[in-house]
Image (tube, rainbow, N blue to C red; front, side, top):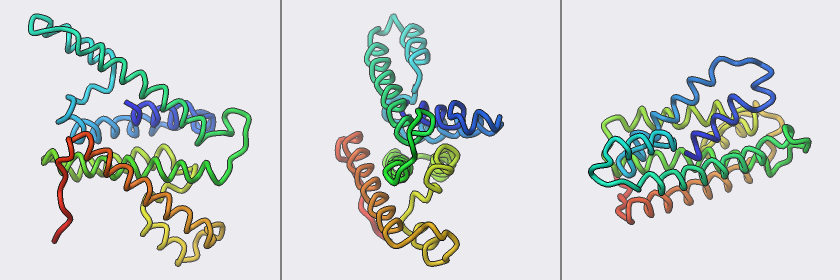
Length: 205
């Protein structure tokens, strides 16, 4: 729900995108559902919407009712956090100036959701893991591409730095991007391990 609301805010509500009257926001939002349904769907059913949670719970009320209340509470917390982080990555929308921290938060979040999607798909043995992972990356690029460049990968940052095609990507900025991306990836790894009760997987050939 956090990712869904965060992408909606960035592609449909951010002043820059709203002024451009872009037509890609539906695609970006739809890709979040694809990413989450295959990744987190095996854990919670992939509701991501209080109306969906309530509807499912009511349609099976004779089997027991009440879980929707827990789902709705978590989804509303996710929505509130999305609004908070939206204000951090889009300070211009709130009368503040963009800073280096804005870009680092953007890179952290993008890498976090990419790695989280990878881990959840692998652990769920998803039949469409590649599609889900690609959808996650696509939606976050749509959401944050104009904030930090949407690298979300230390190798990508290194390639752009060595190519010299981004004059503003100096040594300090490239290094801070890469460290932030690593931190986002590690945080995501512990998150998917916690979600799956530490049923993780080893890296191997």
